[in-house]
Length: 255
Image (tube, rainbow, N blue to C red):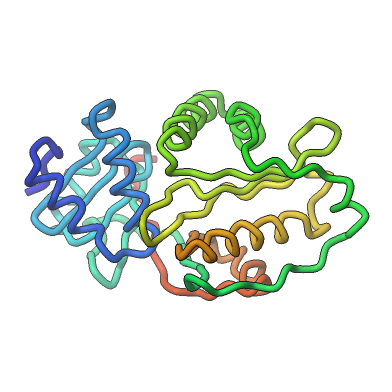
């Protein structure tokens, strides 16, 4: 039975379901640790299940009964769920929408830095701790609610040493950013790579991603991230290895 995480036993079930999972093994337990008290209605567990329903898309680690899962997600108003098909059957009646691939770098391994327009690179200022508000604005310029949530979460994670964000600036404005937004003892989940539109295709995003991944790897962590099929060639070209796959299922009845 799927129940809200309230007790130490339920918290342990949640963590156990996440243990060893690529990306989800660090993102979901960290979210429970940081936001379990302030957002208690977000986290649920079953005997072999961890579920985060903090938005319209739920994240699932472990295994659940497909009929119960479909009913529960419908009750929560979720429109999509991301899960490991090899471990968990999809919610009954939901349709497979896309694959999400896990790419990463083995701890201790270093990638060669990709080519970039060196004159442009030399003109950029590197900021290892850009203002959270500026990063949020760059990532979510037209989504004020998501922007505010991102800002709040980033501040909380940074204060606890659970996130690192890097940026490149040009003329006092952010030109590019990437971050590790969930840092554990073994994994570091990288996300939100973004380059200002006028500077895209000139190599600065790829180099910043590789530099951050190499730095995390040198610290004994395994940098990991999820990508859509259309980004597979980009990350393969940078030298990252495809390590796994998740699937996104959508409830067409939710619109």
